[in-house]
Image 1 (spheres, rainbow, N blue to C red):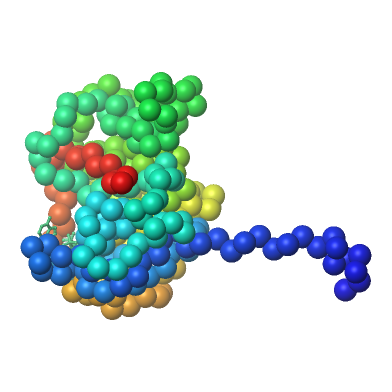
Image 2 (spheres, rainbow, N blue to C red):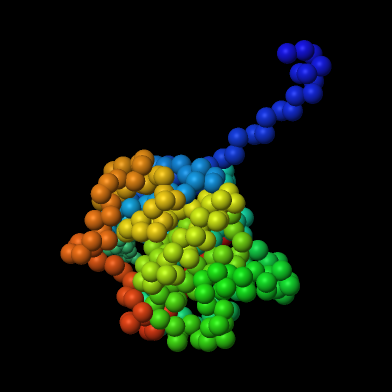
Length: 275
Ligand SMILES: Nc1ncnc2c1ncn2[C@@H]1O[C@H](COP(=O)(O)OP(=O)(O)OP(=O)(O)O)[C@@H](O)[C@H]1O
């Protein structure tokens, strides 16, 4: 290579840090460790499923990554920054598992979805036209624009789940952590949401999905982290036959009631810790 070519060569961009880096993470409830020494990196732009049986620690790991439950030991970095110093919460979209009934405040569907933009707004600033358009688009994406003014209390369980997904979309983050986003959602909406997640991935978003079954997300999932009693039992291509969970008679207990029982199950809005 000539001196001239060398002088024209641009320096390579610095390597991007992983979107999520977990090292030796331990999380305990009442001194009982339920995540026991997990280490993993999730690269920016990766789509990763976190699988495992009931109680294996999937949700707890996700919540620990977000700082919603404290680590007993180990570290978490988000986009190259230790969790306790991480401030770019507008980059993170969290879809929690639907939580207990009765804990929510009365809110319309639109209000809940708009709350997904809190992290990206300056304190006390009003939503911009762009913000409002993003809320409308998110509601359209999950097929609930027509329910915008209804109370979330009136929605079925599957619809509430779609509200939580819309809330994450409305914030326009680049990193999604979703805890069973399709559980309780009807088949047609599941496919729409899978298409949405595929589009997010196509735009370079990082997506971490706690799942019990891959379902319509299967084509998207190249990597699965399988937890077993709080440790990583497998990290690689999705194990087969993982579709067993979808077959009749599987013993997995899904935490989400479907439409029938959903009206009483309010989403609890959680904001990651920012200290
Ligand atoms: N807030 C809590 N307090 C005490 N124990 C908890 C709490 N949350 C979860 N656990 C327990 O920790 C263990 C791991 O739970 P976790 O919800 O992380 O598992 P999971 O793999 O997501 O399960 P599931 O598939 O049922 O959602 C379970 O034994 C659960 O009962």
